[in-house]
Image 1 (tube, one colour):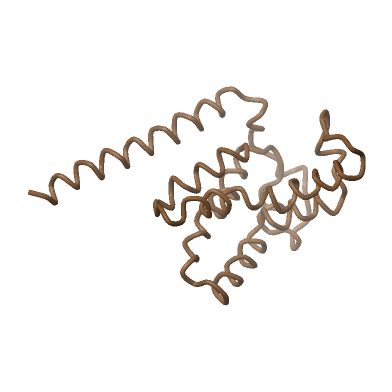
Image 2 (tube, one colour):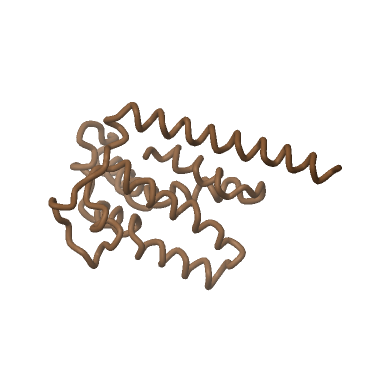
Length: 166
């Protein structure tokens, strides 16, 4: 899914005002660490942003970072960093996990390879998923789910708040 949707999903599931920006950041973090850094590097090196076939033109190390930080291994790295240094921010694992989970279905590829990178090799026999950028249905479904879940949570809180006041 696109990076903005990942950020919004992060805020949707971490509903703490004081963590609003961090939830957005952690929702986008797997992409920022990998393709974000790779794109910035390419821009600094060539003076222009990658356009067509941008994934193919990323440095190879950026692709390895992508696979690493879209895997359970990357999730565990983040978990241990937060656990050791800022346990109160462990809730921010949720947006990071959601990013990885959503990408399993909205990026065509090998989800087993992606989840267990670098321990399992890529196989074209296990390829499935839909590239979100090639499917208006997936984009529309994403928007409907984000809006619908947020409306549901808003109404639930409003109704629960009225019941609680009574």
